[in-house]
Image (cartoon, rainbow, N blue to C red; front, side, top):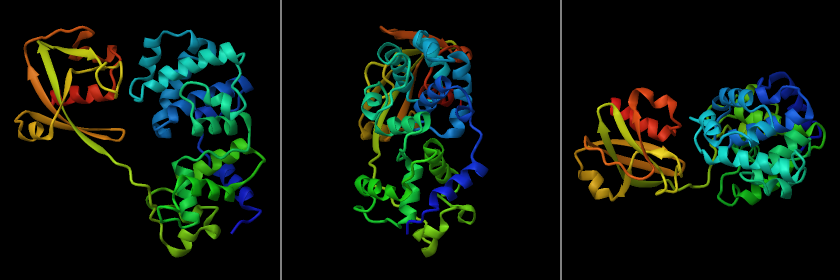
Length: 328
């Protein structure tokens, strides 16, 4: 199945079709490294179209490692607000500090050193090596997985295992223009080999694709368990002000501002007559009772937020969704 001109086909497609993204613009080596670092943190579990405006605003306020490392935590979180997974923002600052202290302000050039930085794992380390340092790595994101599964028509549990997908990734082996090549393959997955209705007529890999030949584009995924949990959000309100607390109780949204909450059992949720909302978070389906109480019950680490002034506070999307349910 391997053809020597596959890399050339992929790069030709990329040169003619790649998206214009702010972290891809030609700039100095220092800026390229920093732009790659920030964009890769933001792109963890977040779509490109969502990241673009956040990235542009973030770079405007924190143009380099030094400005990020010395910035106030609250200011960083405010510019991250709405992206979710706020631990990424905290880890990005910690990483900036560590790069300045231990690596003389330069992004490390090997996997082990990169993975020693907060918030950088296997995938992100390889992305940085490929994109910022032009090393011959092809990071295994969801787009690359999907292309491999379709090219080889992988369906069985054993076939779609991480180990087998890594072996099959050798199909793409290439050493020139590594930064463009890695992005090109991910770009084909994002724009052409889409999860639903892939655009095979413009794909540079159709001649090598078993899924195209069989007209079977269904992509099998390993089963992920989404847990359903039940909660009661306690809404303490006085006039236009609502009581919020710093979350030290639950593992999700740690240290962020939420409404006071308790985990409850399914039976209590089912038979409650209070308003109910559903919020999906990571691998958890949250079913929430909204219990309103006009009597304020202030606690440690709590604050009062005026509903007309919520934009002045750093609030996770989760809290804003509950706020919106109250307005409705």
